[in-house]
Image 1 (cartoon, rainbow, N blue to C red):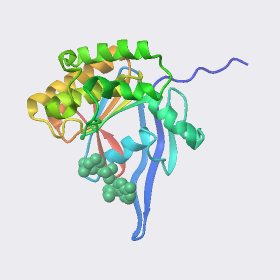
Image 2 (cartoon, protein in one colour; image 1 turned 30 degrees about the horizontal axis):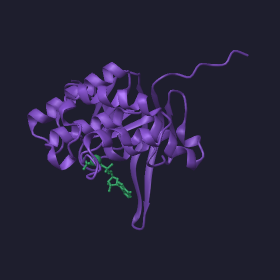
Image 3 (spheres, rainbow, N blue to C red; image 1 turned 60 degrees about the horizontal axis):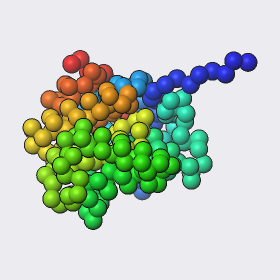
Image 4 (tube, rainbow, N blue to C red; image 1 turned 120 degrees about the vertical axis):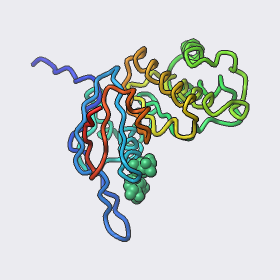
Length: 232
Ligand SMILES: Nc1ncnc2c1ncn2[C@@H]1O[C@H](COP(=O)(O)OP(=O)(O)OP(=O)(O)O)[C@@H](O)[C@H]1O
Ligand SMILES: [Mg+2]
């Protein structure tokens, strides 16, 4: 028998999520289908409470779906034993949130390297990559500074370099520009799009800004628990 090659990229099939609450079930996602190829970037818009963060959490394996499947390069991470899920996440998924979650007691350089320490990339390889990424986000001159000494946009750029240090297949960005002014937001998005293109990863970004979303090849709107492709 010829072994079938796994389909590269992200495939989501009939994904649902219902939170069971004391007041009754809350159906947030009601059957989402989505395909994204490596090197592609998509934006997700939708009203507050429509389920954008919930969807990104599930893609990032931080929450299990209620039903349906997520395949990352042909693998369903939720089929792994629970103790392997954290390893999968660390190895294959990069997160950029609205809050940067940098470690305040660590320098820029150390913050970017932290995820590589709990992974098995060799230290010299990780150091070379950290240097490249920090150069790409324009922070080579800030390696030994602490997060508190940086601007909001600079901190987000460190968070992006950190998200990419382990060469993830999937980068999930949940309103990464929410706290930034327009110019800093545009810079962060340009860098994210460049990084995705250069590294052939998938980017799924949630945003409330149509100006930001318009920079993406595809824009989806999440409402009534489903993704709707938007005419640009
Ligand atoms: N852990 C949870 N337990 C129960 N309900 C939750 C939980 N997380 C989210 N929800 C509910 O799911 C719905 C979607 O929330 P979510 O945070 O995904 O929306 P969102 O589109 O990201 O909103 P925003 O644009 O405000 O960030 C909301 O009604 C919320 O109350
Ligand atoms: Mg949200």
